[in-house]
Length: 297
Image 1 (tube, helix red, strand yellow):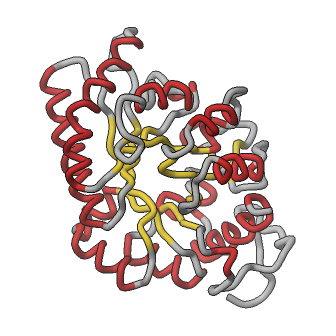
Image 2 (cartoon, helix red, strand yellow; image 1 turned 45 degrees about the vertical axis):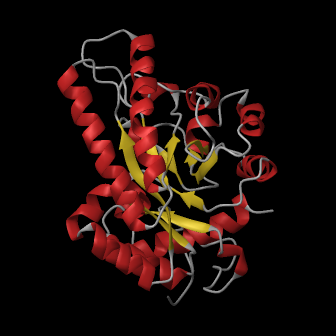
């Protein structure tokens, strides 16, 4: 890249120089593929290499477009780690056919994670079935599905990572809204088999978040960062901002997960139409800068 480094999507000059490949501060930085949503696996992998990231978080749909074996080879040959695979889950169907289909899909996801060389399959557990108001029943079905899937995942060397989601997504995406709820569902299983995701976007608001992160010592399977920006867009799913553009204290969260013993990759996962439309190299450069200035000490 040449000229003045700019932040995206605003195009304002960057406050600090962009860390370059080989900078040890980037060793744990992972670019979740959703942050550069227009790129396939090959392009996203090349982007991570150009910007010196240590890992990439993959999504099943773009992996399926080129095949799991090719995706695994591309990442391996690039010298990157696969920090996680997104996503399994959606385990709350009330009918037998829906439950069977969900279990079959999650078995495939487990196989894909193992083939990609990651031990972390992120589970977005699912919301309420259409027309249902039985929240307790939906949560119980998540627990019931885990009882089936955990042995399958354990045999494959894959840990199922429960992702609590902000309460605004409870109805349609994630009936587990807090770390405390996710840890309760994970509790019957060894930490090596069922973990939790600490996603700052989803848990920053929770007054018990830091207490629950400490309680999660040994169970944190993934740490994801992006900011909470206001006002939220009409499509709240796309309301995630670049670190430093919103309200979240990332250093406090990073220190908390570090204190809980987590030393794995730190994924930047941003769902944002402006970020998706921006030049991917500019996005990656901004991610690296903001990671250094907002997440690290």
